[in-house]
Length: 107
Length: 118
Image (cartoon, rainbow over all chains, first blue to last red; front, side, top):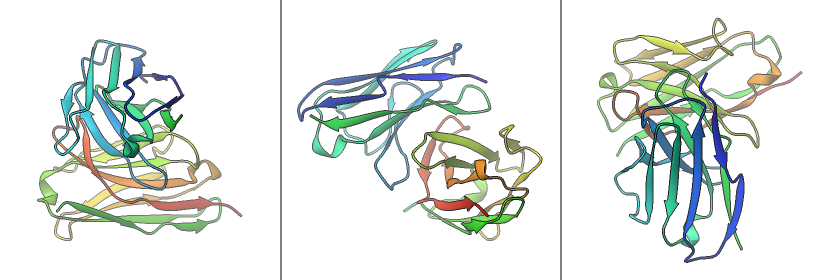
């Protein structure tokens, strides 16, 4: 199975900050990397698919990049509604696997 | 509007069975692969199973032989039959719609809680 590792596991930031979350795969996943946002008690929401494509309806302050084994999610200017947990997921190979997430908290 | 609504969760004893349902609306259900994911309390997300529009099925090793995914395209409903349940299966179960060629999952249900306990 492809192992996904995300860092940091948590971070504290202020509204307006630029933050970056990193996701690393145990082998190349050829860009088949998605980012989801999850708020407490809610289902995950797709933000970015295939590494850098912005899902329809998602604000442009979210962006993704990367290739091979290393990927990043960037929020250019953190907004109050962005405080949540973020997960990366690989869909290069079944079983689809997720990293354990990054919790973004208010500083 | 695309909508997925899960049902069928609850408390079940170890070794017991449960069938989850996911009612879909707002899209041509038969044209899309559908999947089940789960999330143990306070934990991350795990993929459980996928069924394509043509009926091909895939399972995580942890549930293979115990869980069965199926769909009824005439009812726009996805199912997950869960047998031989253990405490490790306790989780919120989400159904999710494939966006395109199983590369991402663009719509998720609200989840249904399965608790396996004596």
